[in-house]
Length: 339
Image (tube, rainbow, N blue to C red):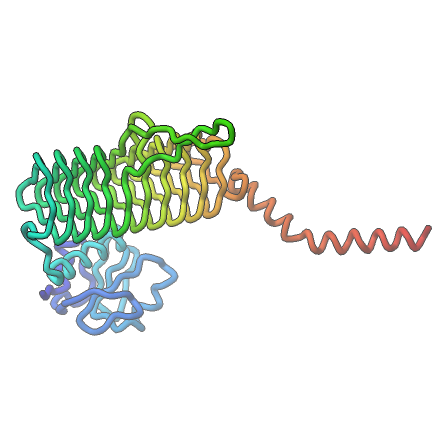
């Protein structure tokens, strides 16, 4: 597929600066791009790379006013480039169609129009798969589970019984939704399993990375709110509720019954204890250990997590401890020599 810069600008909602007749047939990063490809620059500190790049055109912000290459100036270069990537990449892969004969489909299963099911999928009794959804090889769908429309479920995903998935949800390889919550009662040094009879609800437009585990609720439901994006290797425990449009980054862990608000960012390797609330628009920094409620719009870091400015100050003091130790040792030595 080929598009001129002018045609691309119209699709991306941008304006052309320079020669709009240049032909584009692919996308790439600013450093890797070759002739015939378009790249983007969103950060001002990388503007110097525009003239060095092999790209035939660049997507930039509207603040950029001159360049040796044709530009497509947009309000949001990152979003515009994402659209360009989708435009050029969408026809490169042949998507599966139809139901493979090796798929095992139970009784009373409801399949929507244009559902695609690849080899060795298992769909248990009374499950529902919405129209235009795609199940890659080896996916397991439990009894009475419901998958919405236009979902993409990649290989070896397990969606357990009674789990509910909304529309346009993407779930990557190896993820497990609806495994039992970690609930045990200790009696006379023996751990007795507490039945986990709730479910998991994943709302529309959620994307879940590879090897994520989201546990079913003990009662009621574990909820992943609309538009939330979850990175690889994340653990979300039973009865957790995550609000809309939040970001949960790799290796984060959220303990049972914690409520995470809307537009929250939980950075990599952060850990949250159970039964706390994180307010809307809060930011949990990488490797933070959150042991109590976080107010809306707060930014916390460190262990135990504190307001970020306080945590930075404490860390600065900690870095000075070796110097302070030497100073105290000198003072003690001086005191001893005088006595």
